[in-house]
Image (cartoon, rainbow, N blue to C red; front, side, top):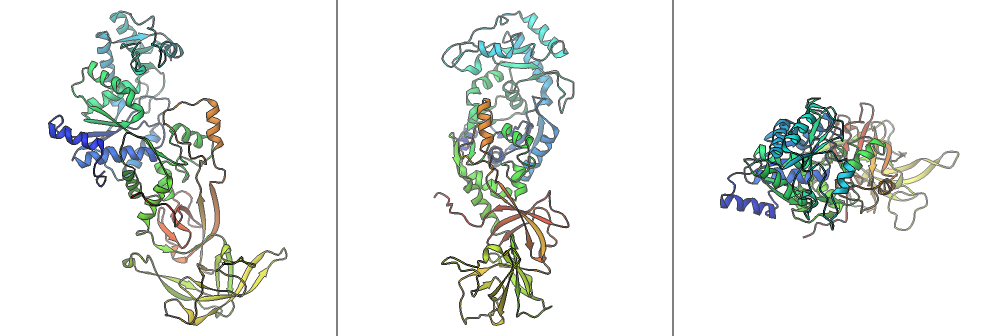
Length: 560
């Protein structure tokens, strides 16, 4: 968080160190491995790692793997890759499942203290007994079982004597508490499922609200930073640490989550898009996942800068996606080589250029970074231009190519349209032009001026390429919601109704021959078209596939 000089969490940590409440800083990033990380998680990563770095502290990467039904090693590996790609090194790599034995023993301690009991109510009955925000809950008829009976039942739960949902372990706190989270929350449930890390060793698993504070305490975490939807659970977090008699006592602090327009921030919904084939995987460039942004061509530097500029506060704000794109452009404009690509080709024959002749023209690799040097571009009698750069019957103020008009070819010569060649159906197949050899770029020609400059690619040596242009996957700007919210079936339908059926356009065109040796993730600025990334999944030796990262310009301005 270095350039984001101060925020309320930083102030708390600073005061903790100055007053001696803490003598070190230890944070953690604790994803559940039940999906791929998205741009919202990037905020938590930057905050946790960044604040620890600011105070020479440490950060753990810890997987909250307490639900074997939804978790998978695939997600574990993807999360590790994403955190490392964003530029962060964790000090410790842990799993909640590393601590299952200790959690079980702490649960036994609660039972022995009369602070937990085994309940036979079903999940629906527990919900009914819990009460509402305005009405207190009712005590379970099993709440007053003896300590001995609870110990016996809990041990038998562990041995696998009960089926899924047959019994749970609940904390004994206060069924009349104004905070519903304290109305005897479930601590353990029976789940006969194979765990990605512990296999079939366990058939009971701790609930997140019980496991998470214990993990923080076991690891010696000082500041447990999470988003504001966990604020109501802070009293339970503290209760678990206190009643389980944990020696180390972390402090939970909440910050506002990151929301972006046209972007879904729910792992469950993102998984639905993958499962129902609206996209071609978690790393589809239209997805807001870190892997999707990486494949599209976003850089870790741009994402980190974006997150830092969104700030750290209690409020959850909705940020315009144009702001994220702004930081991508800012990062790439000094890194990406310039080149020319034709996305929708139209052949041009320069009739007065010598047949069989090819000359090499010089062009800067990046005019903003002269030390990148020069590249050479072949020029000959036949070239490709964009279809949109020619009109047979143009409107007023159209300055590109049309019959009788002259334009400049970028880095090359003036050409003038002399003739239009059509097929039997009347479709334009090529245009014939003449060039003026006196107008070569870089020679200082001042004889006359033209209003239009267009780009091109020499035809005989050009390389076939596929271009993938992306629009937002979700059309409704308000469809940004909490990760853990539960919607009914009607709302689920509504979400899918917002999927943009025109979010991907695939075009077949050509690029300069010097692009022959490109590698996956190489990035370029194509003249007039924007920034593009070599797709790591679909590019082959026969055809390069480019994903458009962002267009060239935007009206977005950073607020001062």
